[in-house]
Image (cartoon, rainbow, N blue to C red; front, side):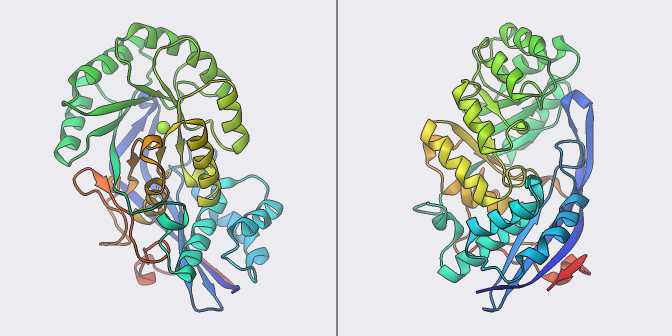
Length: 368
Ligand code: MG
């Protein structure tokens, strides 16, 4: 089987509400998403989506994906897309780094591998059943009362796990947010306080040694060094996210005891191939993981839910679904959706999601 054509679309995904991170330092109103279809000489086509969370969240941006695909495409035409590791090695030779560029291409290759094998991705990735995955809400930074109101709204939709965004310049307000939310959660609900790198190490140590809450705290500071320093001086379990880009970062975090869990995100890591490697490492060292994508519609969410569903229960916390923050849906009725607080991956062969190209509009580029 050979790749004969790669077609690329761009779609703006407006957020239904403006989204604030880092105590209001970063504001997001729309996402720039890239959709990609790989066609083959066997008549099988595969789909992928790559969608950074705006331009300011990570060193990744929407137009960069399309520029990178333009560079990669000539080297990929003619390859067998089922050889996912080989395709990744070719991409790494043609364009070292730039993991976020490669995710959509890698997901589309997995979709083709699954269809040609007649197996859903959750099974190819090692799962025994299409396990329902707990989904978590994402609570934008606000006053303690505003954030508790958002948690109550999320609870009405079936969410029992929440990711509350904290990390402002006002230390007292962060302490108030954490204590109010930890104490005000509905019975049986869990919360992670996601700082998104906003604290200096001294701030993190001061806040976390002031609060009584012992919930998970995510990415308190910018770098792995800083987070490791904090992890040794606080009682809360630490989850790492934005500073984790390569397998080497994960090895380093483990050796230093910098965390008890990580976020595994295909777009940040370079696709399902790399995310699976890191998921397997996380299982082997006993981490607990949130497996979800950086952003995107239900297509990107579904790829991540396949990986989450194939991960042992003991190592899986919950997954966030970006598409509930969008006011457009390019694959209505398809893919992994929140049903009473959990999402189940499709069991059709491959990714199990196939957008109608007409809904994506005119292609941005076609390579053949
Ligand atoms: Mg995070």
